[in-house]
Amino acid sequence: MEKNKKTSIFLIGDSLMADYPKDGYFPQQGWGKYFSEYFHKDRANVYNIARGGESTSSFRKNPELFEESVLKRITKGDIAVISLCHNDQFSTRTLAKKEKKFVYLSSEDHCAAETEKSTDGVFRMTDGSVFVCTVGCDVKKYKENLSFFADRIKEKNAFAVFVTEPNTGERMYTRDGYAKAMADVAREKDCDFFDLYTFHNKYMEDFFASDCAAEHAKTEVPLFVREQMFLYKLKERGIISAAAQRAHLNQNIRKTGTDLVHLSETGAELIAKWVADHLKDSALGSLLL
Image 1 (cartoon, rainbow, N blue to C red):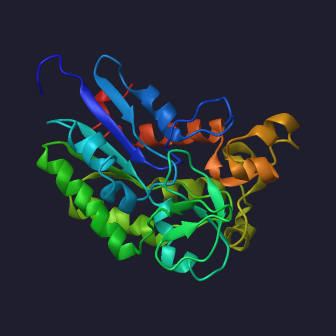
Image 2 (cartoon, rainbow, N blue to C red):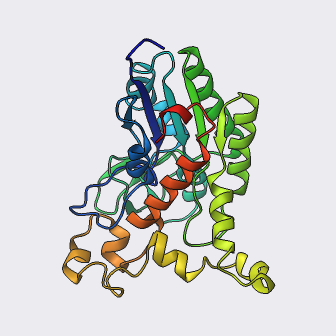
Image 3 (tube, one colour):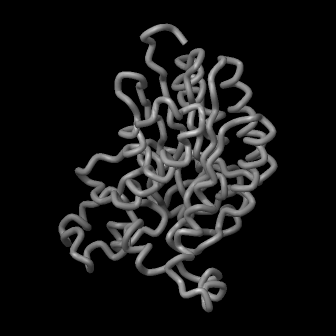
């Protein structure tokens, strides 16, 4: 590494990692915002390029994302932290089977929209507008995409670090196949890896009594975790006002006051700490506080 050269760290992810402004989104936040604060500022520059609605396929196919934002900027000794999964689980083929469906769209703001039937991955909104849905993929394609990222980053003499995504607040154990796939790629490509998904599930299990953990693990996430880490009944709990709910830029919050996919500021802070703590022995180690 060149003397006095700061290491560039690129955070590649979706809405669970993305940075959100307080205005219009409070208390929604992505863990990348807080993870950036765990680095020595005189040693590293952190670039959070995570965007809502993206997947491994959309990051790979959209030149603005991986090619422009990462490959053209990353140099020897730099690091890319990759945490993508949630939107990969949404297959356009599956979504196309129903006449109307809430789907995640590939746009700068992670949002949902009611759509009419699609057979080509292009979803036509009920108001007449058109969006291309985030490209979901099966586990095999997911592994191919992750391997592509690792190989291209290594060609730049840089490091890829893989982090599985946290679970949702809806049900536990929802990402098993994808989490294992990322672990397999990390091992095959000799990349640093943290299984945040499994760690998150174990954290939630601790809130159940041992004699009923198995029963609850098949159903709902513990109420405490929903309230602590996700966007759960925000108006009812006094987190936001009725006016703030009506004006919220997250459509799920605007409609119901609850979003059990996206993280609260508290949840994002907690996950950022977990990731930083578990990557101290990785390529990031000497850069972390």
